Image (tube, rainbow, N blue to C red; front, side, top):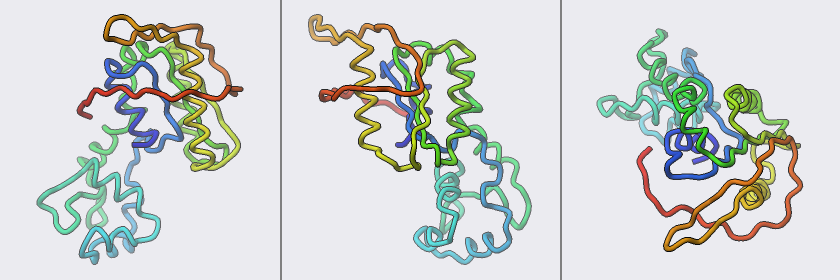
Length: 215
């Protein structure tokens, strides 16, 4: 799911989760045309006979994933999605679909949900191009007075992923008291303070919420 999915699903489903961790999120801002609009790219896509062939086009992987997720078209074989440009022309309806899926565009609609979380953490590497939008997300939360931690760590988009997950589990454990009452687990917040770095002890196993939900 990644940081993008965590931000999107987390904003919409605070009734399911008690804490939210957004690791190196991509696609937070509206994408515009992405890598579309380049004649050579359009020609390569037109020549592709399958998604596997399209995936081999250099530098286009993220844009293809965005198009498949946000502008699918079952009547447009063989790739079955629409790009933001066609025959050199911008397709404004597709650009609008892409923009509608950008968390920084719709976050204001879900501030009430985000205020229900007992802990929100965001982190990103200092060598990751996604750090700019991650900082924007942190700033928006701050502007609404929503407690959150934000950390820019030394590294790239994929540095020390396992360690970062472990750190977030410990953040939750350090800021919550879990009580057993009947057949339910009640999570009660303790003091949550925003910081740019965390020194965390070893974490215990984390219990995931069993409930299923729609995106």
